[in-house]
Image (tube, rainbow, N blue to C red; front, side, top):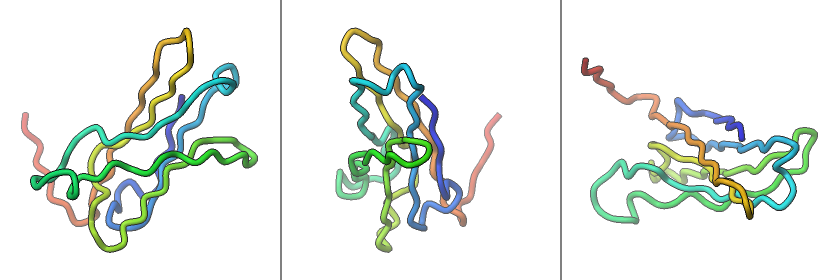
Length: 108
């Protein structure tokens, strides 16, 4: 599986990420989305799960997760997709979405 993240350095904007399966894995595979890390205190309402992926059969078929911020500033953190297929090992892939005005500290 390969992931493409749209607007990953502007999480306060509406964005999306896409999960692309390789050709042998496209049949019989279920793709779900998840939040890997809670980024705020205060319970689930501050760290909502992303919506379910929607399959797009465009020129390059993929599973798309659309994050509509609606001014709530909920979509920064670590998000991903999981592909599940009977008889095969599950695959998880993730991406980090960062605010454009965030301050970051490197600790060595």
